[in-house]
Image (cartoon, rainbow, N blue to C red):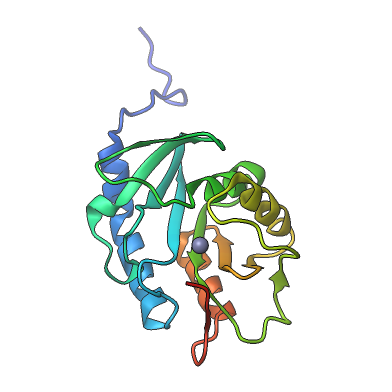
Length: 185
Ligand SMILES: [Zn+2]
């Protein structure tokens, strides 16, 4: 049988290996957020788009000290349920991340912190406060993120997008206020 090298077969890849590939990126960016004073307790979370879903930090994890088993694969989400694999549960804000990926196909990664700048006049601020961890917050933020790379979710914190986790994190840090960040938790 003739082999046509331009037509390839996909590799079978374990989700565990996809996670392994991204773990260091999560750990490094979590530390960067902490170093810049934006990691408050277990507040904040990060995610990356992968084939068939997203990788996201687990609920209760600390961005300042992420462990490999705190990166969780989510394969589907809606306002009723979030399907995941792994021993730890995904962030309680997973559906918010999910909707941003759904509505903005170009977004590859998201960094979220529960802090914001004291003076937010240079960034987009959402008009109303929407309960955290809801699809509605995702819908609203996704819409604003179609015209901005960072959005200040009213009385909640910053949501930054990027083509990589490093880019999203850099944008969150740049929008934050090292000296005196507002904290929302
Ligand atoms: Zn939050």
